[in-house]
Image (cartoon, rainbow, N blue to C red; front, side, top):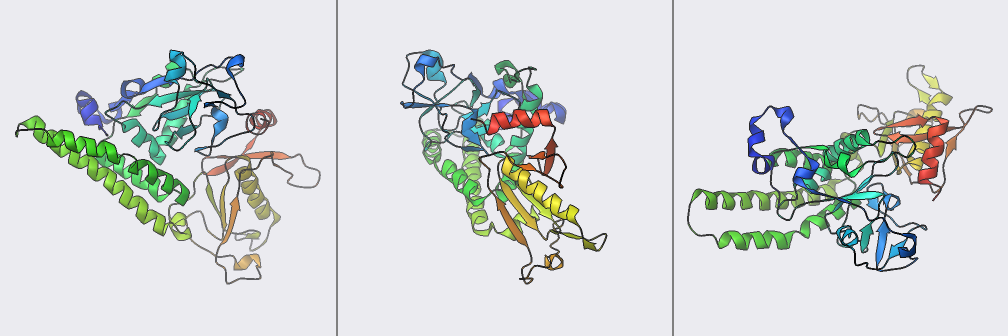
Length: 375
């Protein structure tokens, strides 16, 4: 059940808007990952030792270097066993990643390269907030800023617990959730729908509790009203997800603009300002493709301006010039991809930073490759 800012911290809602926040540890339990000893690691076992390498593009993945463990009679182990709805955050090295553990995932215990944000039993506000696109992006920015350490960057449990989380009313949470739904892929929407549908039993139990209440005093009336708001919230989320799945076409995604996984280019080779073909335009396209492949994959649409105007691809001399947009789907590469701009120039390594592609200096590129590819 979601409790909004007014219900969790009513005294703070009378403060200025900028003060409507709470430390993460005030609204959720922050659990350190389990530090498995070498003799506890197995090639196969009851639990996957879930680490940062198992989070890619916000999804759960397995790798060849995964380790497992059998059940251990330790409190630190039991606390780190992943539960559906747990938010797993990578804490080691300088790139924060986040994944919400789901009931269909393999049994796992979170290892010491990550931490768990666990919602309290009666409020999943933090889960709902981090499911929104802006909420997730802001949290990951704050987590990156809180990361310390020079030789081996790490986000400490204390720093994670102190991250400030906005306390939003349900209407604002719903608005942010709408934006996330509208910009999500169909696969992501299906996962989100599955998770929301898994809460039916919780909603049913809340209905029973409220039905058992007697009388018309203010508290009973408030609880009944609150249940109606929460059930309406979940039902509205599912309706919007269903509608978005059916209308999640190319035009809809163009309308929502560029993201970390979607970029527009007006042309492949035609320079509109110079009114001629330009090799620099082709290089810009290759840079974006390399950045997508080096990060989490993505989609490049050629024939679309930054302002979402579709200008077409006829000027790029495509034989099938009846096509209005060229769509290039880029999958994450298993190997690092370097781009050579011209004949004898040095290779350049690109990654995605938000809705743009960025060149990494050589030292940062080596570290990035070691973390993402050499495992």
